[in-house]
Image (cartoon, one colour):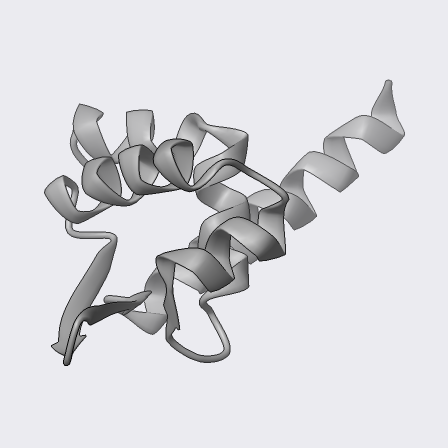
Length: 91
């Protein structure tokens, strides 16, 4: 993996966005509402995630919908969560 990908995944809001759009694609308003974030901050995170190829977008009329670009991304998040829980138990 490259450093940009790790940097993108290190941000809590970006991981929450991935979980939010993991089930189905959503527009920026829906994502912002899901995370209780300002639309401008959500858009900033989405741009960074597009640059890292974590997500994809498609336009439908005036709306842009975002989705996770590969199912493996959600698998990585789940494995990371499992490992974090396991390590936390040892502390």
